[in-house]
Image (cartoon, helix red, strand yellow):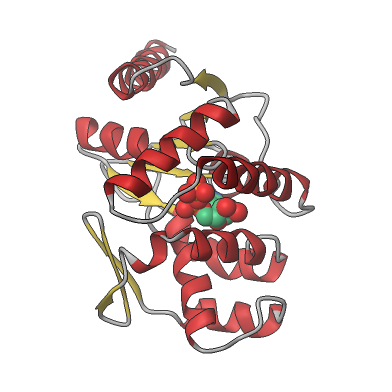
Length: 225
Ligand code: CDP
């Protein structure tokens, strides 16, 4: 396996971890993996082929066989762009349900680890630091209050011209947080060796700077050791 450095950014829905992770990757010239997109694409493909979201063996087989390619922010499924389609709240809810299935998670594990390539990888999700890359050079638990996250998600949807209701979004975020934290396989939680970054009152720029500062300190610390 590649020994390229990994920065693992985990956290709850709509905390801004995807935006921060992508910007950190860009600043360092590293690869970027949006692991949530893999769960979303799988949920989308399952819905498309009429698979029940509870059929664990069939979903795991489906996940293994999917031809998924990332190109910048665009995601391709079997050669077709699905970037917008997988970002709906409906697909997000379905992704969160299938993400509780251990065999499905296992089916996506190797795919995620394959993104670890020189010069390095920045990745975001729920279990990047705990399960997928436990030896990451830097682990960050990026969060924000549920109210702030609901507001951010609301703005995102409105900007895209999609219907949104902040009360419904808040309730949905809370349900998704509870499901992600309560599942028995790879639950969402801050690892003991992860740095906490609460972005409730931070701009994206400040959050990106903080992650870069921690990473630089890690690199100079290990060079000095
Ligand atoms: O937009 P949001 O942060 O809600 O979701 P996402 O990061 O795109 O991921 C969609 C769903 O996949 C989440 O609600 C999680 O349940 C699940 N997921 C996971 O279980 N493990 C990951 N590493 C990434 C996402």
